[in-house]
Length: 307
Picture 1 (cartoon, one colour):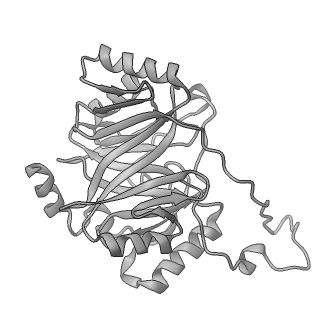
Picture 2: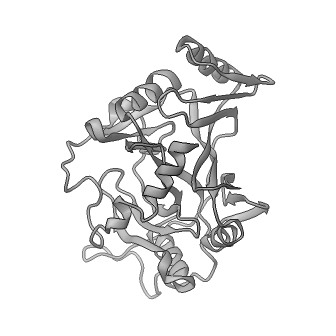
């Protein structure tokens, strides 16, 4: 694949100061006002004041100028107008939903090494004579990277075709006319699209080291504001990742995630024929209506339609 990861996502927020503080508590480091860094991925979330919440720009990383040139040529072949600056950046709007993209040469994501976690089970108990490491952790949770995002699309089938045939994404799992899960790395999905009248931002997801970090992070955010809870703790079916969803002060959903599927090659992965009941989760609390229909969604969609 010519692409290798999500780099920086620009997100519009309506409550800038409160939202900046919220993401600091979430575990991101604010390097400059509104520029939030993950532990291993650098600045990956940029908050911008906006009249309504949502995506302002999606950033993707390519390995080198040759890969970038191939992507630019592919876009040109698709009869799209693109803007190439200084040979190291390609900016364009996707032809399906008019979402702004920026592709630049960027280093590959490299996670800091972490200690192996041992788990006892009825058949094997490698940890003896000491408590689990997770119960002794005192450091604040720091998500490793921005692993994926989910957004709406007016035409998910056409959107998936554009991302796979023009940009070089690979399709991991399809939900037919409703949407699909795509990747530009070995992570099961870096981008998912779902049917919607406007390309609203459903959620951004930050990868943690393990499920205990997901639980610790979610619990910390609820201690600060119980109303920020959306859904979790649970485990998804598609992608397999543990999840806990929370809502920032501007209404955007942010997910703590861990143990997501990795795919070594397209031919090595065998997608399951997911049914409706299994699509969203394997186990967890009952699916809240807020997750399917955020309370502000009608106002957001109306504002996007007028923009």
